[in-house]
Image (cartoon, rainbow, N blue to C red):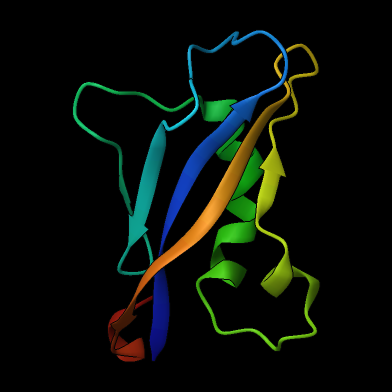
Length: 101
């Protein structure tokens, strides 16, 4: 099975940065389920919770007319922060579906 590895990047903060994230902060999802955060950095669990439900769909090839194929922005639910994240596909990986749960 073929999936995309993803990078989630903080694109902008339209309010005040309550959780300490700044534009450019990011994490990567590799090999279906491996979360990598750069050494010495963090990622807010609430921002992570906002983007998590979309990641499995963005890991797969989608029809061109699917809205998720065209839209890659996600907003954290904190109304004071208004943190906007972008989901990027950064590479393809071949995985054996039999080895995944």
